[in-house]
Image (spheres, rainbow, N blue to C red):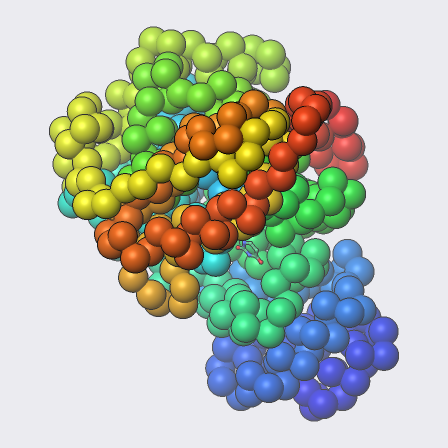
Length: 440
Ligand code: URA
């Protein structure tokens, strides 16, 4: 089988067979297929797409390219949750302990941030001492004892995705529905949970800019999960404005703790209730309404917060910062960013807001670059707020004053103003289950 022929077949609009896709993935991971040929194949897939059979076969080949975690020795239903990526999206830090506080086991492997989007592992590592790298036995022991462990992706989980994602990132081939679906689902299948809840973001801060594309991606991922025998559902949620007010690693952990203590922003709290309820539903804990009540009760009673604190302790973190978030290390510099004109904020280009946070040091410029856990943005105003000229819209935090002008320019370029109050966009758009799309 020649890679040249496979590229030509896809370039001309053909469908690759399971055998061909296995050859492609195995050969690329083994280093037998060079980056330049795989880059050509990715671009052909970007243009031509893949049918459901091809996407499922590619996912399976990627999931089987490395270790596959067998969680069956951990008693109870294991539910995973995955977001397609956003700005200010700290929901995992809230919903995973909420679900665990209701008896669901969460044995989750998370990723790092890249580009304008944040990653759970970076956020967690802003807690002094907290570890996210464990060997298999330690990971299992923490889940058995605490009911939850949020770890980094183990070295050999879906190595095909690791290699392909790096190549996609530099060849403008990230935003392809079959490539995103296979990338996410290969990791989820290899990570071994019984059920999977997907949070598919849509809007200016998401990979899927339109609701139509987000639903299409969700349907494909749900179908892949179900075909592999995992109960899978997806919520389509709004990423046309940042979620909550904090953007940046320790700032987001602080906001997650506030939310777990019942003092979080309304939008974040509401999205978290929906996500947690759906995780509980996938674990057969009751109807969706009953599961929502369980999630609310876990928060109100403080059990979700205590579960988070127990997880931090089990993962070696300094739990005192969780009980008193003023103890988090603080950025040495801050500055206020003021509205350049009066009016309603009619739109926030959320990708540009994420880029501004990255420029402050909260995100990586290169895949292995360092980040400043203390850096980021706290929004005082969001889409729909009225501001006077000169009123504070956001506060920036960073390591050096020199970082502020570039970040300010990116941030202000994100804002649109209007004399009229914009309509409120929904937090959630749809819920996708096997063969079913329900508009919310
Ligand atoms: N997240 C992933 O893990 N993969 C993608 O392709 C996009 C977002």
